[in-house]
Length: 156
Image (cartoon, rainbow, N blue to C red; front, top):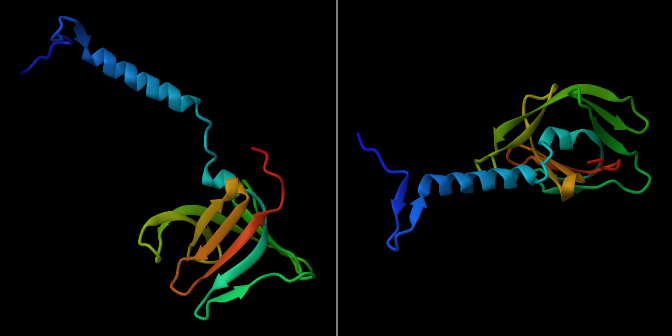
């Protein structure tokens, strides 16, 4: 068994307390990270109403955008795990949603994914611009990616 001294003498005769110095560094790092503002989690950022701004992709690399006067389409995510799909002039459709990780077919890496109750295939989820934009991409070759913008103020 080897026992190391807690303090050792430096070449100039000073006593150096290595465990004490290491402990102080850990404490400073912990206090520093505790003071940093907490990042909202993905689920927290997703909750709210999102207005559809466009869809791209598919075999023909389609670009579909709403035209002036088109019915507004929204997704409203609730804290209770439901999503309400609305499109002006149509009955709203309610279903459940959940977040999980899924391996992307595009880069082979794990990403946050959104799963709707009516579809077993997840959509790769990206929230950007400090929670103002949402992208949902089919996790399939030649899939589509739809973009949305938050349609109510962010109260974080």
